[in-house]
View 1 (cartoon, rainbow over the protein chains, first blue to last red):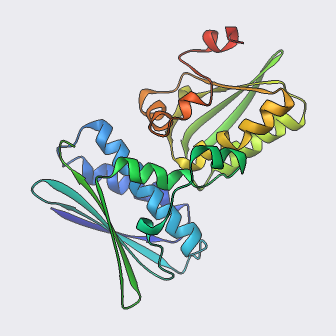
View 2: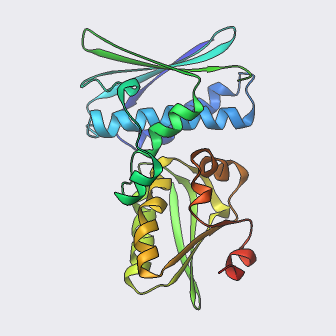
Length: 137
Length: 111
């Protein structure tokens, strides 16, 4: 099972992303809690790319491929642009978020807490971020 | 889609966000809270019963006011969150930093 969606790099595309995930995750044996959590994590990565890598430029796109494998579900997010390697990003601690009155920074903490594995590669101008959730984890 | 109603139950101000809060609209939540604080509100309660979804953009709004409100003596409480919205606060441990109550009465009665 595999599904792909192209999203325009504007934050208004996030609700479209949630609808896509809601529709396609319903075919997968995941608990409601896990469906909600992986939706949140995928949205956080996409929102981060849309806002910080693409500056909400409506002529840019990112793509999301959702793939079910035997023991896992893989969300592959591709974009062209300045590479943002989630693995190199040191998430701020909550105290820093509060004291600096940052409205961002929490999303990637969520992604790291929710997903079981994160992979990143950048080749030929295309960045690929893979978020992996194992069934029953 | 997000709409936010503001109700006054003297001396409290109650915000009622309805819909999904994400990076496209969290600024509305931010503005609603900021306006109340600028207009002198000392007790702001967020009725979370109609929040269908919240991402980190929405959580970040609440977090960004924690210190200022503490210094200014403004109380910010949240009540009636659905289990799955509450869970997002819990994943990050924000439920330990922001007073969250199961229902309105408990929020009103808490110091």
